[in-house]
Length: 164
Image 1 (spheres, helix red, strand yellow):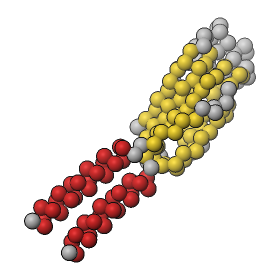
Image 2 (image 1 turned 90 degrees about the horizontal axis):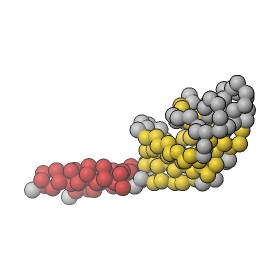
Image 3 (image 1 turned 120 degrees about the vertical axis):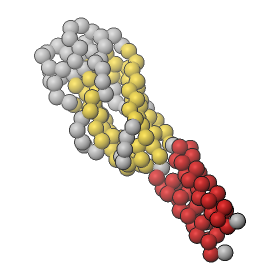
Image 4 (image 1 turned 90 degrees about the vertical axis):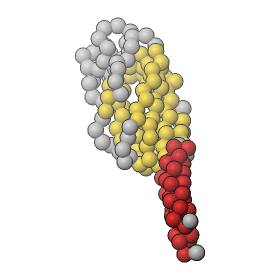
């Protein structure tokens, strides 16, 4: 009977831990993203804004309303990096007319308690512009201490049952 109880408790602990980590996802939204109106004649990445986050990064979504100079070649782009690492292109070029675009990035592994930074590129060659307005950032994380606390609580229950 004790063996069955231990197996049921262990399975319950595992299922609870998995469900708990999914149930405790936290999404924080930041609407105070700076407006960009830039006509720099450069292909360099220009710093835009950064946001710190706590917990393990699950995903982020950047939503922007953006456009370029309305004519000619399209060169405007947006990039992100984590903890001042390599810049990663979010994909896409700024359209000629105002358009709302959403960039959803997920699938992070072992990224926690870090800084998410964003940059943009206007484009070299002269005459290029990049405008970004009404941008917002949503960061979804798994709070690590809560998951660990649930695991340790279940482990403590297992140990206490063994001593009885």
